[in-house]
Amino acid sequence: MSQPYRHYEVVSQLVEKAAHAISLDPKVMELLKEPMRTLTVSIPVTMDDGSIRVFRGFRCQHNNVLGPFKGGIRFHPEADEDEVKTLAALMTYKCAVVGLPYGGAKGGVLCDPRELSEGELERLSRGFIRAIAPIIGPDQDIPAPDVNTNPKIMGWFVDEYAVLQGRYQRGVVTGKPIIIGGSQGRDGATGRGIMYVIREAAAAFGVNLKGATVAVQGFGNVGSYAAKFLYDLGCKIIAVADIFGGVYCRDGIDPYRLKEHEMGTGSVKDFPGTAPISNEELLTMECDILIPAALGNQLTRENADKVKAKWIVEGANGPTTPEADEILKEKGVLVIPDILANAGGVTVSYFEWVQNNYNYYWSAEEVDRRLERVMVEAFRAVKDAYTERDGVDLRVAAYIVALERLAAAMKARGWV
Ligand code: GLU
Picture 1: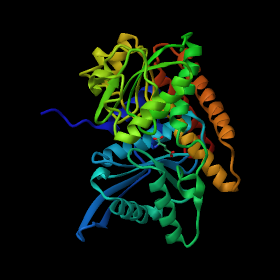
Picture 2: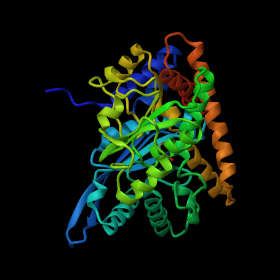
Picture 3: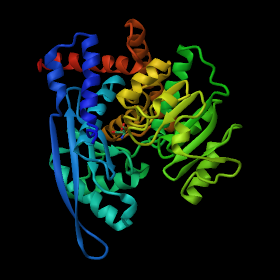
Picture 4: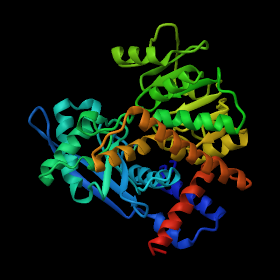
């Protein structure tokens, strides 16, 4: 039998590779090796039929040298401790790459939200916040949406926390509905950030994006917006897939109309004027840019060799395994890593938190303008690290940028 895939070890190896390239102080590595704290919780939930079901959840706080812990909460049958720890570590590096004053955290509840009624989902969400309340707070640890969680759930989170504290503290959760302190532009932020990074990369590597063909895996909060913003930029969206299946059209798909179709039918499948395509076919199809924007571990040792895309832009967290990364590098595929490509979401979460803290709210244009600046600067920092060092890919370059900032902060705070 094959060994189970240990995600956390994979990130640790990656970090070690970057640390080696910059001769990082071993004490910094030692501090980043394990999360600072992981809380495991059991959440009893009264189901609609009157029975009680106990759910298992986690909040992992990886590192907070740069500021309060920050990161989303996912509801998923595979959101176990190893996955949550891995994603928490990615948040530490992601926040550092884009220069946010935050550390990294992640939460997860082992469940399939599609099997839960709205009432059960609300009781589970409130129960999870009660369970992790002792370790979160606006200056301590700030949750946000992730896979299968959304603004509505953030509304329950912030409300439950207010009940527990006896006062309403908006800044304890980001990704909230706008009416209760959410930010303009948070919904589309990750997709918009992906577009800015692709635009900057195209300028840096001399690529014309007009008519560039794009395939997107996942049509949720990340994939659908990425498709729309790239379409607006002149790219041609030729394939899109969700968990139910995918659609393909060489002449291009209008992602705005596809979203309407998906909202009406629950899936991108059967969109008029397209042919069906499976997720696996989408990952290995002929295109200029492939955006995996669903779950982790999609590009693996099994399929990486068949990838025909010129660029892979990681909308999801951890969609490429290290073996796949090596194969893609050999094939000359450019991979724009998750900790840079999808950092737009947490960046606008930061803007939301800033607005909550001073109780003054920005226009959508203001948010987008600031997001653009952050993403452009982050891309340039990573690109510089990439060009300065031989044999380093963009992923290692992004980790180098993050590690240098984390090490400087640790030194400034006297941790090392
Ligand atoms: N879940 C998102 C991520 O993986 C956003 C986190 C946040 O906004 O704090 O980056």
